[in-house]
Image 1 (tube, rainbow, N blue to C red):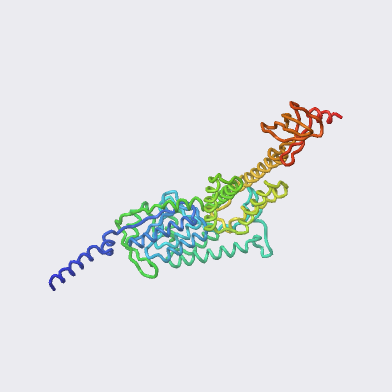
Image 2 (tube, rainbow, N blue to C red):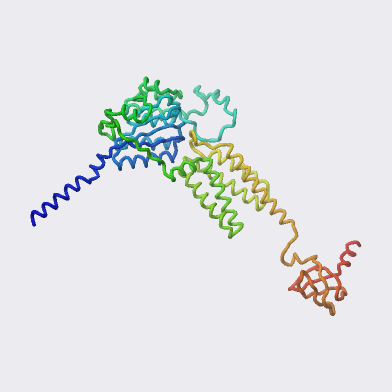
Length: 457
């Protein structure tokens, strides 16, 4: 019995050793790759976080972050940098494919990666912070803006931009010191919007090497010692298979709706869908579509750095236009359009490449909103001026025919129905009369020719 127990324990130990996750992870050494293509925003951050989670769960050797971006939101960029610095898996930043770039926010992210590389024919830089959000500039409206000076001789209104720029310089220098890269050029990219090609970046010690593809990338990265979350790691990447992580449906949806212009359109569709449902109960579809669009629009705006005063102005403008439709005053209509335009223009606190309100969206949206309000108001005004079609008011002036009559009272046929009636003048069965009033389901009638004669006198 003792021998049998020992044999069972030994078999269990061998099985655990063979099928343990550590042994399987060791036999499945892999490099994962995630591509950020386009503006960096909430969707990019979510995609990168999920890729890091997968890499950590599977024990990947490295995570290749392939960049081709014009920049994006500062908040999303800082979230991605924080994720890279805390990642237990080494991250290789790779600007690709040929013709791609890592501009603005992409430059900071590349500086933060454990290993930085570029493909031939790519560039990086132009990392100057974009001005704080506000009213969109009209074409040709900023020609002389740079000529305005304040008391210190600097361009007027640049105090906030100086703070933002100095903060960005401190960030890129700290990343350069952490990764042993050229901090002086990083500062130049921030202050002067400098850019470099792949070979120039290699010569300036901004990146570690230039690689034509991921196979060469892994070969050149092999053997490098990097600091991963406070511990030294020697990369063993030569010949690793590369598995690309594709974004899921939610991230693709997020990338679409977090465009502020799309978010505003979703909100408009949502508000008017719900209004239509309230004015036409039972239609169902407008209410369902409106509720879904409104929730999606609010969810997208919640992920963006929005100015709540701008959002409040937009909603106030829509409310004014709705009131204008039901109670035309002109003042409310003009005020609603103005509030909507100013609110949409002020909506974003900070703008970045791919995240800016466009007049091509704001203008038509405001015009469409005003048009719907005017159209609704026109129909309501026409309905108000038209004669009543139901109730006692609708009976006045209708023709009728005397069916029977006796002593000033009798019955008439009006609109195919038999009514009790009375008259102040003598009438006889078969005469044509018209209704002048109705009280307690009794019609007051008069001869039709009498009404016309009275009109002639």
